[in-house]
Image 1 (cartoon, rainbow, N blue to C red):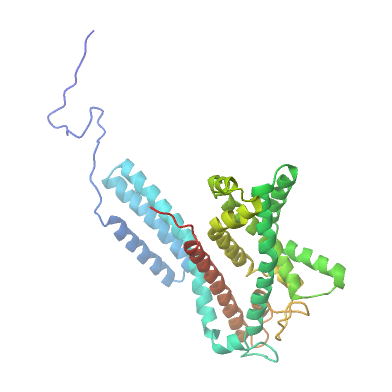
Image 2: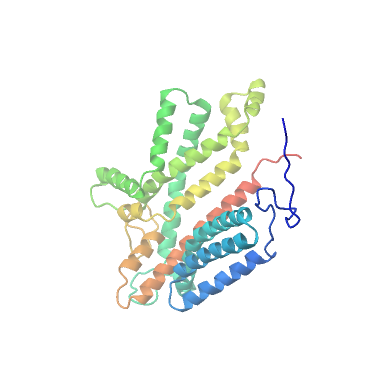
Amino acid sequence: MSTSTTSRGPDQDLDTPLGGTPLSHGSLPRRAPQLTIVAALVVGIVLWQTGMSVGLAGVLAVVGYTIAIYVWSRIVEGRRKATNRLVTAIVYAAFLLALLPLVSVIFTVLSKGLPRFDAEFFSFSMRGVVGEGGGAYHAIMGTLIITALATVISVPVGMLTAIYLVEYGKGKLAKWITFFVDVMTGIPSIVAGLFAYALFALIFGPGVRMGIMGAVALSVLMIPVVVRSTEEMLKLVPNELREASYALAVPKWRTIVKVVLPTALAGIATGVTLAIARVIGETAPLLITVGITSSDNFDPFDGRMATLSVFSYYEYVNPGVPPQPALDRAWAAALVLIILVMALNLIARLISRLFAPKTRG
């Protein structure tokens, strides 16, 4: 048995294997990605200034950066590092493309809503107002009242349902409840509005409009969110805590009230807050159940009420003459809704941090 060896030629690089494929290449400058991004941004700005839409210019700039960094790296660094840079660029590009609509929405709402973000907008209604002036005070109060009623309805029902499913539920009944909660999670909001209208029309007759109807419709959308979030938080409570309480002869209901719920309070409160943020901007169910009015009405059991989402919708589709004042009010109402949702999300984070169980390191 013989073995053969192949010697390298005098001009062959030590980093080159016998097959002839180099194992090492050069490397791009440290600031190469940043320089390429700046160049792509400049190209995007130039395209935007020449008349192209900002969205298309941004997409072309991102695609140009991805191609440029890959080609540059392929020439200098080789295929492996170029592929790594390509995948990295695609990940960052996907992130930027996903972020672009959000930035566009925020910029549009701020630029068009700030002109009417004044004291009059927050202190006057639209009663007797034609053209300029007026405000959304009645719609803001209506939104807060209806959402508060929906919360009062949804939170006890959702929490008790979740407690039953986690602590007591066994057999077919629990499975059917879980199934229907999953179904309710995906129903369109207009279906919730039609359900609430049909329910109250059977009692008060057709054509009825009340704030409580809108609260019932929103509660249909809130309950499955509360159930799911509460259920997941209760499942995270260690069984050892329950068993320790049972070992002290504490009844099950008292264990749930004194041990399980306080431990899961942070997550439950966060889920409830996010559920409120989920429904506070709903339009379709409130169009059917509550309607719109230009006057103050803070009684949810008597007559139509105004809400921010419906107010913004009607101001936009029926602007009147001249249309600009109504459009300004519509964008200002949309800005208020965005601020409310953002505030609720910040409150959810604060609650989660303040009421989270304290652990010792």
